[in-house]
Amino acid sequence: MAKQQQVVVVGGGVIGLLTAFNLATQGQAVVLLDRSAVGQEASWAGGGIVSPLYPWRYSPAVTALAHWSQDFYPQLAERLFAATGVDPEVHTTGLYWLDLGDEAEALAWAAREGRPLSKVDISAVRDAVPVLGPGFSQAIYMAGVANVRNPRLVKSLKAALLALPGVTVHEHCAVEGFICEGGKIVGVNTALSEFRGDHVVLAAGAWSGELLGSLGLELPVEPIKGQMILYKCASDFLPCMVLAKRRYAIPRRDGHILIGSTLEHDGFNKTTTDKALQSLKASAVELIPALADAEVVGHWAGLRPGSPEGIPYIGKVPGFDGLWLNCGHYRNGLVLAPASCQLFVDLLLECEPIIDPAPYAPTGRI
Image (cartoon, rainbow, N blue to C red; front, top):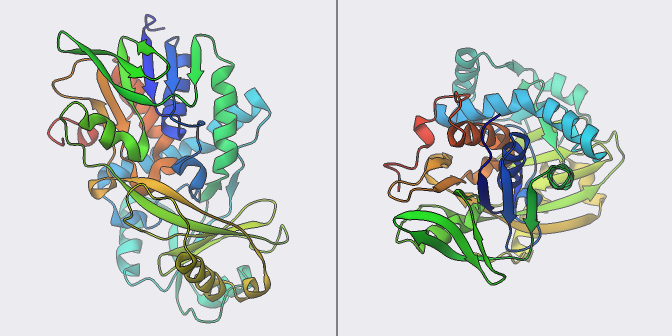
């Protein structure tokens, strides 16, 4: 067990919660701070597919994190469920991609990476997904792709974290700046008080760039709005996930169907719009015509932490001893969280890292 240090984690989304959880299980003292309630931003708003939407379009850096996380998610969910009684509902359904323009590239990627992706006849898709719309002619399928019910994951993580010794969580406690002494970051200022530690971890999602800007550093992480809608159907209505034309349908175990999502540059504005609602409903009906008669039971927006190529920043901030980043996961925060947070803790505690940390290092990237 590593010697105990005090770590201040700024941001209580899935990345911050799991970072804190991993640190606390390694015997570290952790203070977690969030500007609102934990897990209420992108971690709550996302769809929860445990795969990048188009995994073959990403760099090897994203792929390495995604593969580790996908393999780890079922045991993480089991561990959290056993500890808290709150099931994150990792629901393995498989995923069909329909009418892809780059199908050949997808299949070549899968062969290279050893992933179970294969071309299937559209008639087989219609047999497997009887509610699918008529307008599709080709498909590829990956078995074993799961989705996690992210609001439940957040609830479970929070409960598991609070049950650990040496953990303090302060919600509705916005960080206003960093405490710098002798060239070292030794804590943060909030309206409540100052919080000091041996290390400070910035895991504030779309807000990370703004916070780091207070030190004169330019972190290219910016908010990218996404809107989603939700239907409620019978529990066996949609047996697996389907994705076409950058829109997807995700079934939850209880029959809720998520349709997402838009991609909007609108600053920190989380207002939902009628334009997005109509666009998402049109996508829903194109994918699954029966949804034309279903009621939309939810419509919301969240802010993704956009970053260049979607490669997160994981590691020490150059020039500011004591300050660390675990942020900038763009569209894949839920997908990449287990690997990102394990890699982060490996680096902070100077353990053998699970994967090569070089692509994620902030040095040279900010």
